[in-house]
Length: 118
Image 1: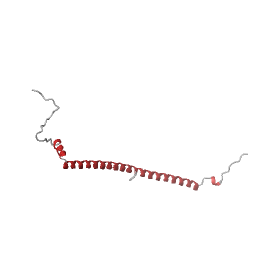
Image 2 (image 1 turned 180 degrees about the horizontal axis):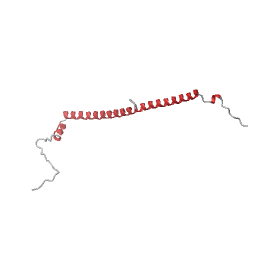
Image 3 (image 1 turned 60 degrees about the vertical axis):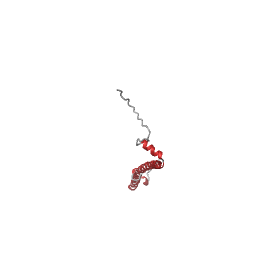
Image 4 (image 1 turned 90 degrees about the vertical axis):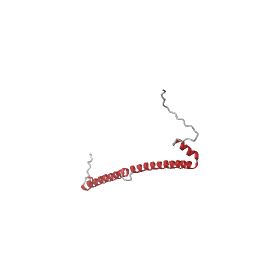
């Protein structure tokens, strides 16, 4: 003879037990939604990960520019000191940029273009 299982009173769903299941589900959904909003804000919000990465890149660009400008400043300072103290540096500039020659020197100009003979 097989025994028939008789459901106990606690096994029947009641309104209160159904309500607590829905409340737990809504609480889980609300927690997941809230966590998703917080993660999204941390990634793309103000001062989020994306902004931090962009600021790091900007900072690196500025640091590189500063190093380049310091090197250029040092080179210009050395060139200014040479022009102030070294007469040969002044002569180099006069010959190269101004095309000046010393008295008694002969200036020869060469052209790459062939000339026509008459």
